[in-house]
Image (cartoon, rainbow over all chains, first blue to last red; front, side, top):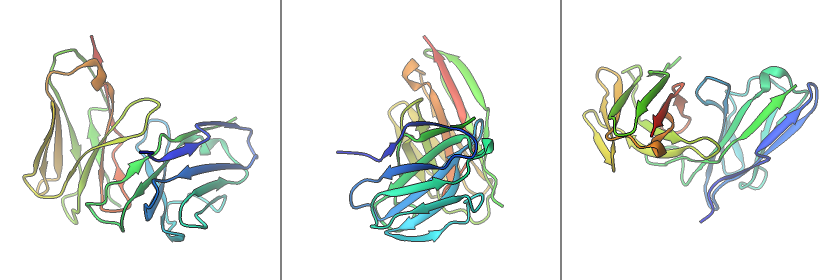
Length: 116
Length: 109
């Protein structure tokens, strides 16, 4: 069965460009998470969706970051006017049910964003 | 702010060696502890979810223990193989996960 997929896998952007990162979760998964992993750090939470509702966006680092999941399946993370500090691996994860310890998160392979 | 610490940051072992690493976390408000293995260019793969103090879980040559009272979990790998080379991440939480910085394991043949 298909897992979580992300595209593109690698993205190089010039400072100031806008980028859009896509996540295709496992079909039927209710919950979707975005995480950011900077070099040498562990992944850090960005935002969480339950179906199409964005229930937590407390981790988004600035108003240049925007995420959506309009139909409750595919999600897009958009970064406007990229800065060098946005260079990171962006991970997407989905889980079957609501949040809970037994709702294992399945991760995609990530998108590595490099801002020059 | 919850802080999850992993040690060591990196580890180089020979094939056949057994190894272990640590995940430390605040013992208050514990919910669940997750271990993931993340190989380069692949997706992080869930190894264990641990919820009870004293939990001990095993998957092949890999096992993990949990002590919620003192705030730590150990991951053990018995007889390391080159294919075990990866970054091992622990994370706290039941929804939004709070990750440690990872332990990068390299196993030389």
